[in-house]
Length: 109
Image 1: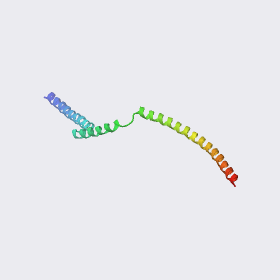
Image 2 (image 1 turned 45 degrees about the horizontal axis):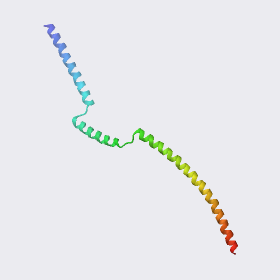
Image 3 (image 1 turned 120 degrees about the vertical axis):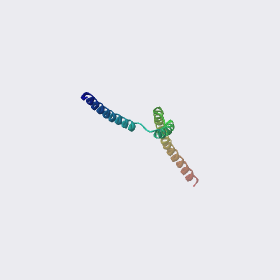
Image 4 (image 1 turned 90 degrees about the vertical axis):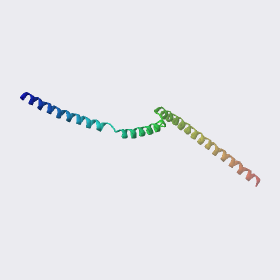
């Protein structure tokens, strides 16, 4: 009889501990996973994000754009230097024209 009582005590303790472990595991899993309603909402949001991500430029696109902007900046700097050179030439021509006009006006007087 004592053996049966000891086995019953061990079995009872095992059941209580097993139930506690199962409850803890179930609670942990419930905290980790979403409900069906939450899953549907998350799926909808992910779909929206995927649609937006399609339009985002890739790393290759960004590096290509950076390279092209660098080329364009160089071109603008060259154009600016050319314009400054033409401007200096125009000042000389303007001075010569002004001198010719003054000479013609003095000649007529």
